[in-house]
Length: 246
Length: 244
Image (cartoon, rainbow over all chains, first blue to last red; front, side, top):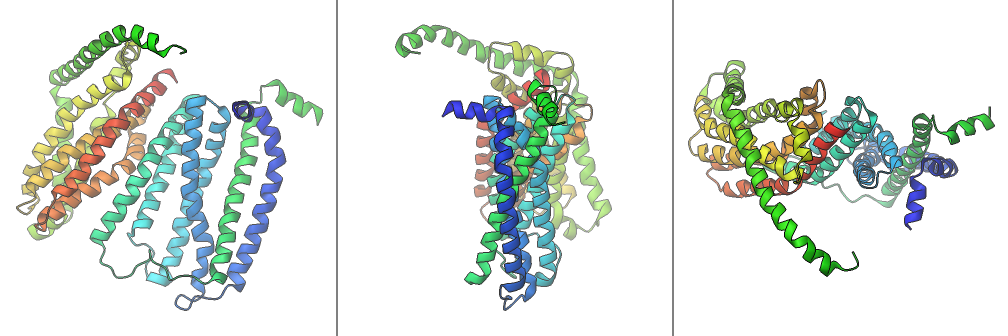
């Protein structure tokens, strides 16, 4: 068990295993997203109230899922890096943070575009929107602190600590924002309770969510491989790798 | 490790000594920081003056009508308190970082997290508590309605404890950076939001004639969580800033 983790933690071994895994992840992501988006955008029935505008859900919800999961992954990687000093965990975290921030931005923007025809406003201080916005700020903080240090090693540790502090705060922020919202906002419409969706509607959504997760895995594996080459460029195995294949 | 019994007996004596020493070290850190603030009272006054100034901007920027001011007063007072806390947090470790005191604290044979807790306590005592005591006065300027003054002071007193603890994590991370102050505000403001929500919530409840002690209890709960978790994170962030 421990030997496995130590092996996984070695950049060289990870480089190899990621090379074998990532094509499968990319293929899976591509297939799922293709099937999900075509099904969701073209074949799923239109909503009886919102018409076709509801189809934004097929981008919006998977992005929101990833936005939250990636922050968890960021904090988990930070913990692994701080406790066991496994460099791979930090390399992956450095690559995941921009993707997470991008997903948060996509969720916010697509929600905004969706909100205009549905609620008649681009922005509403709804509990979910607000906590998503705060999540974006947390992502930006983690990304900024990493670049702020002159030594990459210090930046990596600082980003790890901040990600862990952030992940403890996320549930607190989430619940306090929800509580705040119920106090301030008159119940003009509820977005938290959607009508139960028929199977033809949520099946493509499920496929899209899985597709986004597969994309996250593929993206992280590929980018971490590049990061390994960048950071370990001075090591012998990397040099040999490129001498073999000129 | 094979004989935990004998190990614990052997360790018992030095541990108790270290415990006594720890109490002394924390008290010494506390006294030292308090003395440092007393020698330069201007540093402690600046955030309070800033607080008063920000409050002054709102009637000028929005409207001098008491009815309108009363509506925004709770939020304005709390947001101004958060901003003024940022101002003082930036300098929380800076002096000690520059003159090497932090390195000595790191070398001390006591847990850094507890020594740092003493420093944060001084920070709260010299910025958060005066702010909480001064806030009702500025509440009068903003035509804050009767009945919420006690809620204002009480939530600010407890809430500023949370702010000092959480903010110190960011201050520790940015202490060695050239433009740390800007970054500090980006890092810690999102983490302050729950305190702000419950602080203004308590005042809203007090203004509505409702029960606001529940909100105060939530802030107290946040403070206890911060008291447990933040010192460890502050110590880790200071180690990163010093050792790299």
